[in-house]
Amino acid sequence: MTPLRLPQLGSVVWAELADDHGFRKVRPAVVVTATADITAGGPIRVAAITTRLPVPLPHNYVLLPWDPQGRARSGLRKKCAAVANWLAELSLNDVRQAVGILPPAVIAELLSKIAAASAPPAAPGPSTDEGDQPSP
Image (cartoon, rainbow, N blue to C red; front, side, top):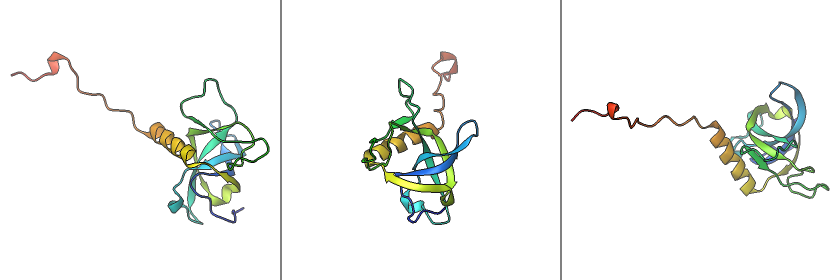
């Protein structure tokens, strides 16, 4: 089903996603594709949302605003978090429903954690062993 309106960066949607075991189910997710890059026929990238919150909360989780009566702009009704390293690329046809939008500060935190999670590891610096130094 195609949503009536295109989602935007920070939209909270319900879509069919696979977990790390390949099990697919309809679950909430946050759109992390830039709004300008979202087109009717194109794919979108999302970060999955989970209600399984380990204590302490892992560094790659971002807590999201929620309200049990659905009064939060996110549309989320349970305590939950977006997972910065649980990303999926979807067709807009995979989006079942858009339920809300996240505040800019939460979107910025999530995008920052996604960038950190996908950054390549730092290259090792130069050795400080004297044997590696050129002779005078």
